[in-house]
Structure formats: C-alpha cells, structure tokens
Amino acid sequence: MAILGTLLKKGIILRESLEQQYTSPFDLQKQELRKLLIHSQHTEFGKYFRFHELLRFFKKQNGDQFYQEFKSRIPVYDYDRMYDEWWHLSKEGRKNISYPGKVKYFALSSGTSGASSKYIPVTKDMIKSIRKTSVRQILTLSKYDLPDDLFTKGILMLGGSTNLRKSGTYFEGDLSGITASQIPFWFQHFYKPGKKIAKTSEWGAKLDEITKKAKDWDIGIIVGVPAWLQILMEKIVNHYQVKSIHDIWPNLKIFVHGGVSFEPYKKGFERLLKHPLVYMETYLASEGFIAFQYTPGKKSMKLVLNNGIFYEFVPFTDANFTDEGALRENPETLQINDVEAGKEYALLLSTNAGAWRYLIGDVVKFASVEEAEIVITGRTKHFLSLCGEHLSLDNMNKAVELVGDQLNIDIREFTVLGEASGNLFAHNWFIGTDDPVDESVLRKQLDEALMALNDDYKVERGHALKEMNVHVLPTSIFYNWLKKQGKEGGQNKFPRVLKKAKAEDWKSFLADQKLTISS
Image 1 (cartoon, one colour):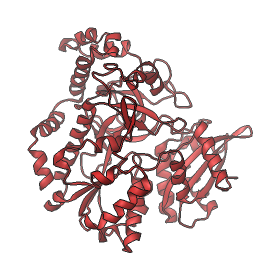
Image 2: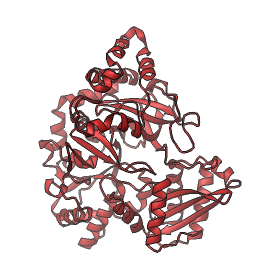
Image 3: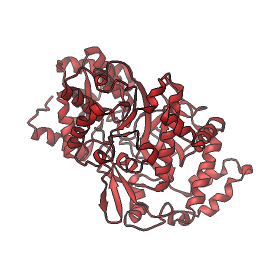
Image 4: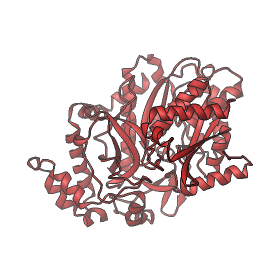
C-alpha cells in the first residue's frame, strides 16, 4: 500500500475531497471565484476590471449578485483575444499581468481544427492544483477491488519531453512534460520511465528507450493518450515476441486515459491484453485539471470544484454559437446551479493560471447536476453543420465504434472534412485502419450508423448533404501527418474534424504521399 499510505498521510488532500463531497457545488464555486479575485486583484487584469469592487458583492445576503456583476463587467475571452490583450505580455516576461508573479512555463496546446499551436500560461499554483487533483484521483482507487500490492508497483506516464525549450524569459513544451518535470520527490520511486528517458525529445527514440527498459519494470498503472500507448504496447509486444503486454507487465491493472474518447481505440487496445484493465478517464486540459472519473463503473467524471478553477457554462445552441463554432457576442452564461442534465454546454474557465472567462473549446453534458458529473460530448469547432446536419463529435465517435464492432476491424484514427459539392455539400471521411475492409461496405454502414444516431443528419442526407465519401488509409499516415505538424506524441491527438488551413494541409500531405482521395 506504499502509494496510498504516503498519500493518506497528506491529510489536506483528504480534507479537500471531503469538502467537495459535503458542500454544495454553488458554495464551492462561489468560494473559489472569491479566492481567485482576491489573489489577482493587484494584477494588471484585476486593476483594469476593478476586482476590489467585485469582491464587495460576495456577502451572503447578496445571493448571486456577485456572479451577475462578474459577468457584466468582464467580457468572455477566446484564445486570440486573451493572448492579444493580456497573455502576450506575460510571454514577453512581464509580471503580474493576469495572475500574480511571472509566468515561467507556457504549455503548447494542439490548437483547434484549423489553428496553429496556442501558448497557454502554466503557473506554480496551477501545477500545485494539478498535482493535488492527481492525488485525489489516485485515492479513488481505494473504491476498486484491487490487490494491495498494486500500490507498490510502477506507474508509467507516457507524456511529452521534460527537456523543455527555453525561449527568452520562459520555458515551453507539452503540459505533460511540464508537470512531469515537477513531480514531487516521494513519487519518483514509482514514476516511469524515469527522469533520463523523460527528457528525450525525439518521440521515436523515447519509445525505443522505454521498450528496451520495459522488461525491467513492474508496471501496475499506465497513464497517457490511448493512441500513443497503444503504439508503445505494440512495439513492446513485437520486440519481445510475446502475445500480450501482460507477458511483460503481469501486474498491469489500470489504464488512466484522457484527451480523446477511448471507445474507438478500445477494440485494438484490448487485443494487446491477457486480462481486462480498469479504465479511468481524466479531463486534464492545457488550462487545468477539470474532472476525473470518481466512481467505478460510471462513464461520467466529477468536476473539480475547489481547486483553482471557476466554471461557467454556455448553452451550446445556435443562439450562442455560429455555424463555424465561434462564440457570438454577449452569449448566455450560467453558473453551476443553473445548468440542466442532458443539455450541452461549452465551458468557460477562470483559473489560477490567469485565464478569465476563457472559452476552452470543449462541450460537455451533465450526467448528474447534484453530483456535478459530466461527460465530454465534443468541441465547439469539432462538429459539422454545413447544412443543418449538426453532427457532433459524440455522434462520430459512437458511429465509428459501432462500425468497428460490426465489421470486426480496429479503427485507430479518423477525421472528417466538410466541403462543397457543386451547389450542395459533402462529408469526406478518412478512416485509419490496418485491417482489410471493403471501403464501400464501410461507407454504407457508417452512413447508416450516423443516420440512426442523428435525425438531423438523416434528414439532410436526403436533401443538401448529397455525398458521404469514405477513404480508408493506413494508420501510419495519420501519425506521419502529426509528426510533420510537430505534434507527435505527448498529449497530441489527431483532430476529428479538419477545417480551413489544416484541411488543405491534410489534402496536400495525402497528395504528396501519392494517395488518391477521389470519391
């Protein structure tokens, strides 16, 4: 029980977990926003928006007036606006811009379906919050029926390089690399691949080094993005000429994953196992650790309400978003006590890294309002609605999973382009699988699955959405494109919808590979 024993001695983590369990979400969030405003009132942002005046509205008798004042005074920010008005000053080395102190680290986020990398500030307080939430998730393992000796085993965290790039006054890199470079001393005994390998910048070299050392480690938990962990496990299995990863790591019991829906990967992933794993989902974004799976057997995740993030929720409707997924002026925003189960909301975050009313780009749905439990259903810009089909990322993931099961194939990656087709419209799907499959059969079943999942799509398939094309590609093509983009490994994921410049780059890349994409 080495890990759990160490963590349970840190009573503050346990107290914070109990505080969230026995305090209303509204009260926790009010308290969190108050803390953020107090701490940031003397920053340039805090002085400009007069945080000291806002703080007067937090008295109990004022009800939710604190929030009405907060949202009336401070605008909603997307990345471009936040960076252009505030974060670029922090990046230039200036102190106390949107959060106290100097920002030492910037996480390079993958960007949206049509944008380049974003520079997201990472403060010391944010790193502490991520660490605390990670510990709280580890403590939930006590709810599972797991052998005691599991908590003496190694934890393999497959992330970006900890050898961060120095750029002027700050360091930049993948968030997983930034946080791994800051792991506490007591965790280093359990942490794999260890400091030396973690510093490796070249992704292929890192996988080679891990593969060579794999037989020397007793791994009980693996953590990372599904695509890259699957590639690593395949590499290990092939290198040692064994049948499953459990022939190398017999005590492997848990996979902690996040960043992308696991369902499309599950079939291929489980081919590498001798016995089932416990799957635990996390919601760790470049802007902070937002939620984690709290209860065994549930697919929903519990929002972290008392650890450096204040949430607002924008109903994901045509009234608030354009057809391209851009936020309209003066959108409707709600506190956590005003949301409803089953409805989709885009997230706004105010954080201890200096984000304020910041549109993170993810869309969530509440599975339970009382328990503050959510599922991620997509991204504001990773959906297709060329002609009213309203095809969400959740629809796409479920359809791909269904078709993979029906045809007994492992679909590792996919992406969709929405394009004009004469005076009408077309969806062009690119499916990554290394299994043999009849493209026309795959197209027919995928189209039928999407129509069954989405009535709007079904209607438009008989009207404006005349074409639905499917192109089957080797999975290596997808990963080679990511490598070309400088997005190989770490927390990087292949975008499920490609638009604008990235869509054109993808088509040019396929042309360079001499791959036909004609319908």
